[in-house]
Image 1 (cartoon, rainbow, N blue to C red):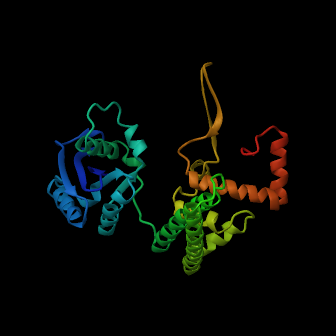
Image 2 (cartoon, rainbow, N blue to C red):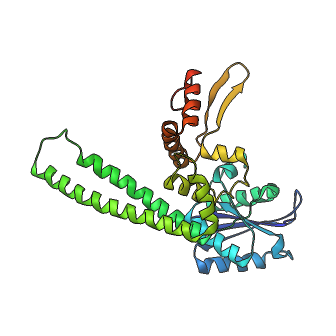
Image 3 (cartoon, rainbow, N blue to C red):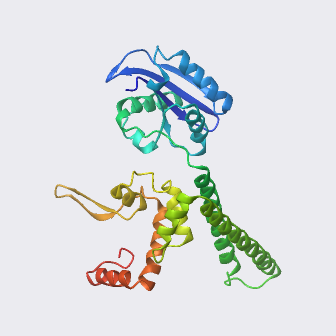
Length: 309
């Protein structure tokens, strides 16, 4: 059982931390607060500060906790993981809505709320594990490619805008846009080759990638997105209900008494990128997969809207 709970409020420049010593549901000592720079030197200072205020507890009884703030929380998380300490990176929404009414809002108060959350919900803790080198590289290339596709689409829309009169300025814009689109397309092709190379070099990724792409309608981008955002399907412990919720394919309604009766629809917490790519895959599947096409038609005949079906 954990006894020392260190709540960390991450920001770009600094780390605000609060220590709580507790056993069961009883707090045993006064709280300690400290602030440190969000860099390697600050990580060491944070560790030494925790060690000084550990009240005879062992590192195995420590639990660090913080909100998932992307790159701001990644550095310390990896550093602590490398040193063998437990850190729990939790969704910020879950922490916020477990803290009750808050009258004070500052970094010190936020770190105390996070420490309390780790203490109260320690049995739900999921210890942080960084992505493997292959998955980390795959994620960066996939997101870079996704950004390039967005830029290409924006350029093509600007280039094809024919509502304005011809002029030297528009001719210049079209000429430059055509050149940039060609360069972006080359970069996208190089990203595709890099994605294929990363997957080919990792046997575990390669095996799951082959299984996913055996489904008609699911190709490189869908498969890569699923691998990246589910940590090669390890993120939810193979729980199909959690996976369906995260993918945005599980609808939920609201019903309370006689006044609240909202039809079922997907929740806004879904991963919108995965849902969009799966939607595209489903459109392709209903064209080329006879079983899916028949199933889709049955849903339409029952009154489902096309996008829902």
